[in-house]
Amino acid sequence: MSRFYSNFEKQIDTKGRVSVPASFRAAVQEAGGERDGDRIFCFPSLIDTAVECYAKPQYDALLESVLGVIESPDAREQLELAIIARTFELAFDGDGRVTFPEKLLKAAGIEKAVALIGRGDRFQLWSPDAWAEAERKALEAAAGLRHLLMRGGRPAPAIPALKPEGAP
Image (cartoon, rainbow, N blue to C red):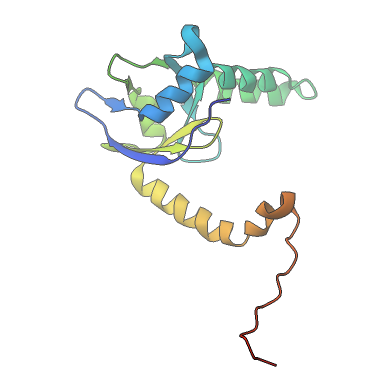
């Protein structure tokens, strides 16, 4: 399965286009295949001041999750309105650029430059300033969570301190 890694900062050109990094385009192409590999599905994030961008198969999986909410018709309706109704289907041009609608960019406070942030199954668009602050907070929080990466989320055993040669 293709994944979105790393982060990039790009300028928005005078026609409102953004050059999507080659690695992100390749992930979209791999996920979507010949039929859907030139399109992304984007909507304002529900939790971040950002725009969520999915390749077709990952977006379809998200839709299945939304449509599968049967315990609460109200919750399903709210998720449909918040995600499906606000989604834009966008295509890459021949030069790997996407014209993001102004409505999407405004939702994330993006003006002249955009940070494209890999999130594994998707990528996000952030304003560079908002991304810098979010990254700072994430790094600060992650330092206290690094133990979760060891041994499947279990704390790693303590490593005894090495003693210099000849020390008692």
